[in-house]
Amino acid sequence: MRATLRRWQEWAERRLPALTRHKRPEHLPILLHRRRIYIVPTGFGMAFAVLLLVMLVGSLNYANNAALLLTCMLGAASCASMLVAFRSLNGLRLTGVRQGRAMAGEPLAIQLVFAGGDHDHRSVHADMDGQAEAFAVAAHGETLVPLNLATVQRGWQPLPRLKLWSHWPLGLFHAWSWIHPDQAVLVWPRPETGGPPPSPHGEAQQQPRLHQGEDIVALRDYRVGDPQRHVAWKHSARHHSLLVKDFEQPEAQEEWHLDWRQLPQLSNEARIARLARWLGEAEAVGRPTSLWLPGEEIGLGHGRSHYTHCMNALASLP
Image (tube, rainbow, N blue to C red; front, side, top):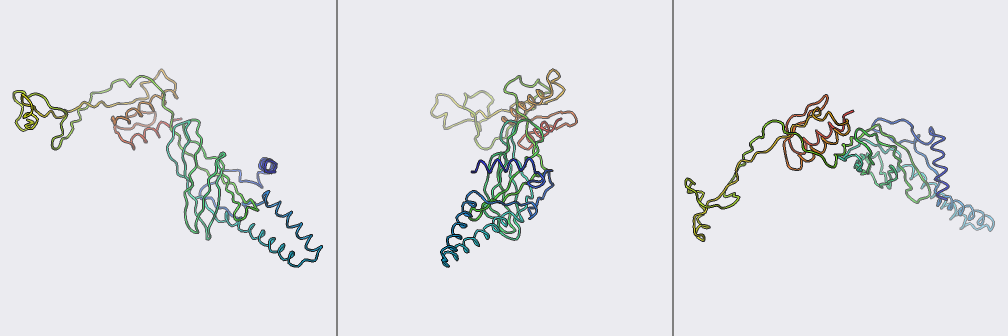
């Protein structure tokens, strides 16, 4: 029965788009109202209606007032449940879409921001690309609904249609509505799996490290000219000669100046993949990097925000 109903629903969506969904993407916020909410009996609801019909015929045939009263009460309850199912969607608003970070081929986490109307919205389900997430929104409240969006390639990827539906409260009726937000999410490029390091550019920058207290690397033998304050007296007492604290020395930290023009032998996508790998390697060790791209030049920097800026620039390339 469910498979048959599903096939009829898919046929209706293909043949009657004006009646079953809004075809064009819509700007946020998207409000669900009575003209875009549809409701039909579920399989359980149709079986319940047949049961009520049998009870009605039996109570009238045998003139059983108690059975007739029970039948009328159950019928009234089913009608009320249809109204409640409709109200669970009516007045619901999609006000925003928040995205995480993901590379091409990985699922991208997004959050749909739903706001409630003048009443509670209970047991609402959001379906997107075969995955469903149940949520509830309080009156004049706000709820974040997490979903995962499948990605294939880098760049701006539009959001697919979403189906909002509810069987609340008795499961007798299926109320649903389609929304298609006019929003796109940015997918980062996938780095190449291996390759050469970037060619040297410029001089290494001396990054002196600050030391406080006795932040030492090792102990070494005393040499003429070492200051007495660096002598490790406690350790020297257990040794045959004087030992001196050897502090960390200034370390040369190489800067990577990544340039699109230095990879003319590669295709555009191969260049993007290599630059993405270099950025990831630099981020892993905290190495300062700069990035030159056609139409944009990002200065020297490091840290998560700098890495995000560079990856967004690569993902946005045509």
